[in-house]
Length: 320
Image (tube, rainbow, N blue to C red; front, side, top):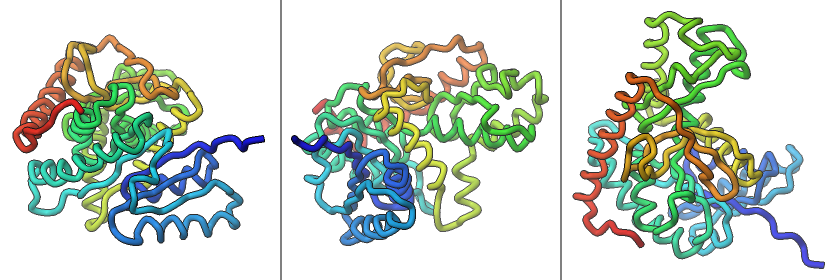
C-alpha cells in the first residue's frame, strides 16, 4: 500500500517572516515545509534549528532548508517573503526597483517548478509585487493572493481590544485597500461583540485608532530600529495557509486582482475574499458608504500609480 502524499508548503525567503511562518506550520502539524533562500546555508541552518525543537514540542512534520528552487516542486502553497526591507534614505521607487528585480526570478522559478500552487505574496510593496508575480507567472488570479488585509485587520482588532478592554475574540474587523498609508478600515463592518464601533467609541478615538492601524508596521520599525514586524505577519500568513489546506472557506481581507469588483479593474487591492483550497473562491462585495467608497478609490489610485512606475522600471512585464 502506497503511503499518502504529505502536504507541502514552500517559503521563498528565510528571513524573520519566512522562518517564523515555517516554525508555526510545522509546530502545528499543518504541512511539511521547504524553506528556500539564496544565501548559502541560511535556510538549511534555520530548518535544522526548527527540526531540533521537534522532540521537545512533539511534532513530526518535516522542514527542509534549500537553496534550489527544484525543491519546491509539488507544493500546494508557495509563500514569497524574499526581498529587501526599506532602509533609511531609500525611496519607495528604490524599494520597488530592488524587489522588482528579485521578483522577476522568483516568479519565473515558481512558474517552472510549482505551476499548480497557490501563491501568497508578502514582500513589499505587496500589492505591486503581487501584480508583478501575476504578470510573469501567468497564473489565474485565484492563485495569487497578497497578504496584507489579514495583518492590518488583526492590528486594528488589537488596538480596539486595548481601547475597549474587550477580549480579541469578541472583535471583528475589516480593512480594504492597499497595504500601506491608504488602507481603509471599514468602521461600519467592524464590531465589538456585534455592536458597531460608532456606538462604542467617539470619532476622535476611532480616528486615532485608524491612524495607528495605518502606521502599524512603521511603529514597530521605529521601536526595533534594525528590524520590522514578523510575529504578526507570520500569524496572518499561517491563517491564510490553513484556510487553503483545510478548505475553510474563511472570509479574509486579502489583495487580489480586480476585474470590475467595486468598480475597479486592473490592479491588486485588498478586499474581503473567501479562501479555500483553490485559493480565492469569491470576492465578497460589501455595500460601502460614500466616505468608504471614496477612500477605497483613493487607495486604488495610489496602487495604480505604483503600477505605472513598475511598468516603466520593467517594460518587459507581460503575461507569461
